[in-house]
Length: 295
Image 1 (cartoon, one colour):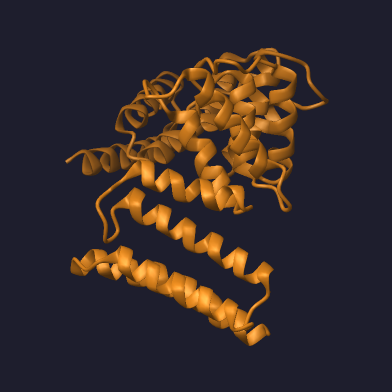
Image 2: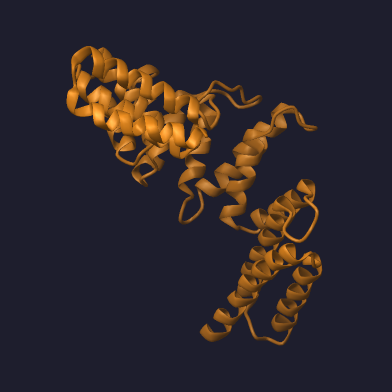
């Protein structure tokens, strides 16, 4: 049976691989998908696999079909059809499909469905993924965003029909933080600093935890705290300059030239004013990297 399961997994991998090849070669990816689906069904009818195996691998086939329609792999891009496939896979327990749907509905703007339905669907699918076994950590962050009332960039956003709850947001961020998600560490630190006193967390510790994983928002915010010497941290201008450079480099990796150059400017001001000479070389190298990427 183990050999048969491996062979069946090979069918799933081949489906997506051949679909991608079909896209490259202008072939009919839909035909390839359905041929593999029939192969899967026939194998199940012969008794080669259990019903549980069949259902699990059928979910993966549906998920791959969703990717094909979303990305245009061998077919015309068709997002409604992609959603249909993702929903089929999600409702049958495929966690990655649940997370993708949660993200899709959370990011929708000005769509053909009502804002309250968008928020409800986002919450539903994020919850399915977050409560799966094992849980999906990024779905936990998504739920935290909804309850906090922010988008995935941390900007204010209203989720119609979902009551804002900072405490509930903090609970979801805490769960994701324990699973090592840097965005969760940052959001939890931000809530602890600005919104609530949930738990026994330390803002500086949480920001550092995310910054150590090169999460630029955390590096930037921590630099501001060290520069200003807020209540929760001791002023450290040298460390602030270092963090501005690190944040800028990580923003540059994400092709965010505006934020990268902003961080460079803030670091340059501190280095010039306080004569942190050992940082001048790092700053000049970073400036050259910005110029190179912008060309």
